[in-house]
Structures are given as C-alpha cells and as structure tokens.
Length: 356
Ligand code: DOR
Ligand code: ZN
Image 1 (tube, helix red, strand yellow):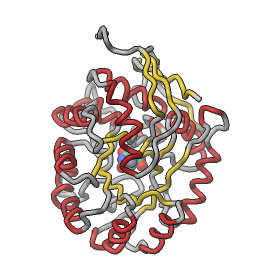
Image 2: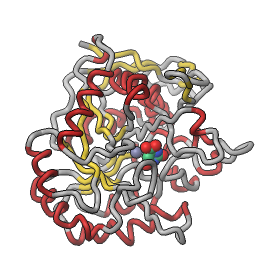
Image 3: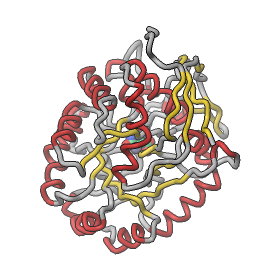
C-alpha cells in the first residue's frame, strides 16, 4: 500500500556486498558485472573448486575478477575484497602476509563439508587456533559459515547448534577477534549477535528476508530457493527482517549470491545457492519499503559494513526509484541459463545507477 509520506526516489551512498560468490571462468565472466554495477566493493568468497588458500592465488583471482568486470562507467571503481579459505593446515604466516600486504581482507571459516566446495574446510577449530590468535592481533575479520556438520543434527537446527558448540567457544578463546556471522537465518543468531560485544556482527541475505522454509515446498519442490543455511520457520524470517531494518550497526548487507547452472539446481541432487546478484539492491529496497524502513536502508547497505571492516564508506551515491521492475524468468549464461531470485516477479523498486 502506498503511504502518503513514503518516498518515490531514494539517493543513498553506494552499497557494498559483504558476501558474494562470483565463481571463475565463463561463469565469472557472466556474473561479475551484476555485482559491480550496484556495489562499490564486494567480499569475494574463496570456495572455488580449488579453494583460495594462498596470497598468490588470491591475487590471481582478484585479477581475473577485475578483468571480468565490464569496462564502462557504471562498473568503474569496483573493488573485489579477497578472502582466505581456512583449512586445517593453513599457515598463520600466509594469512598474516596476505593481510599485511592488502591482499586478504578477511578469512573464511567453512566447517568441513558444510556446503558447496567446503571439503577442504576446517574439521576442528582447535586446528586453526594459531591462525585465530594472529587474526585477533591483526584486527582481521573471521567470516563464519555457522552450521554444524554433525549428521545427527537436523538441518533446520544446524545454525542454532553451531552457536552453542562452536561460536561460543571461539568467542571465549578469542574475545577480541572480529567475527562476521555470515548469512544468518535464525532468531537464535539475531539474539546471539545482539547480546555479543561490538566485534561480533552478521550479514543478512535478501532471500532470507523474503521467504521461509514453507515456500521451498509450496506447490512442489522449488530448487531455486534451496541454499545453505536453509531458510527456517516464519518466526525466524520475521526476526531477520526486524534486525535488518532496526538500524543496529551489527547487521549489514551480504547477498550470498551463489550462481549455479540450471542443470545443477534442477537435478536429483541439486546444488545449494540463490543467484540474487542481478536484482539484489532492488530486493532489499522492497523489503525495507514493506517494513516502512527505507530510512534504514543506507545504514544497512552502505554504512555498517565499512564501519565494521574499518574502511571508509563509498564516495559515490546511487539512486533507487519506486518503479516496477520485471525480473526475467531466466538469464542466459554461457551455454546454459540461471534462474535468478524473484524470477518472473515484479519488484517495486528500481536501481537507476550511480551519480557521479
Ligand atoms: O547456498 C549456498 N551456496 N551456501 C553456501 O554456503 C555456499 C554457496 C555456494 O557456493 O554455492
Ligand atoms: Zn556464501
């Protein structure tokens, strides 16, 4: 419903995406522009088929990303911020060298086998305590995929159990470590982050703000809504919406856009991931408008992330207008296609580009 005092045009500081998968090769070429046209910077996930575990690999990957970004003014100034994939055997010295040389912005903790390309992840956080010690000293953020991998734990409980079994231990052992609890999906995580000290924050995806677990099964299985952590009950979605729109600097934008070819999604064993990059800022704007909280969008999208990471906010501004945007049913990529988030829907806010 149109509200008398709700704006029809919004100018905000250019946002950043504090969590995105842009893949490699032809997929990278096809998707990089979607992120670069909206966001000033993006934290690049390191879970390639061969994970990014060295400074040299991160530098090369950064070069490939920059080469894949189309060369025109909308994409000018896009900066990929690289992350290091933690393994049981990673050397603390490599992490330190990468951070000090400005190549690594953060480290990513994937519990081994929690999600896509995480088989090289950490089997026990005791194995990386020397790395966490160094990161704490450097002020280098730890980005956490917060799900236990214990097969006995129900998939819908994996995040809540991770808080009890792992997150609390990391924080007890490294109280000054900067931690981003990535793509949170539960009220438990919201409450935990709010109750923690200022060095603990969280990212929230557009899709976890929009649908709950019931939607995944509405009318049949909807593989394009399957991601990890999986969407939870409605009470959790509502808690995420309240957190994102609260104005608390502990919650900021991270899309977790994770493209997979349609054949990999619509299969007997479909991959986890939602490709939301093409309409990410529009989706967030629509959610904030629905919550009558458009005045809180800039903080969430453009201010709280850089503040947490100790970086300056972007200088550019972007414009959003209240106008219909038809999202295509699929996007052609290389020799396949990908079904984007909101496929076939009409969004109510349009990204109109950057002001220079
Ligand atoms: O849904 C997901 N997809 N969650 C992740 O943690 C990884 C991602 C991917 O890389 O596909
Ligand atoms: Zn992710």
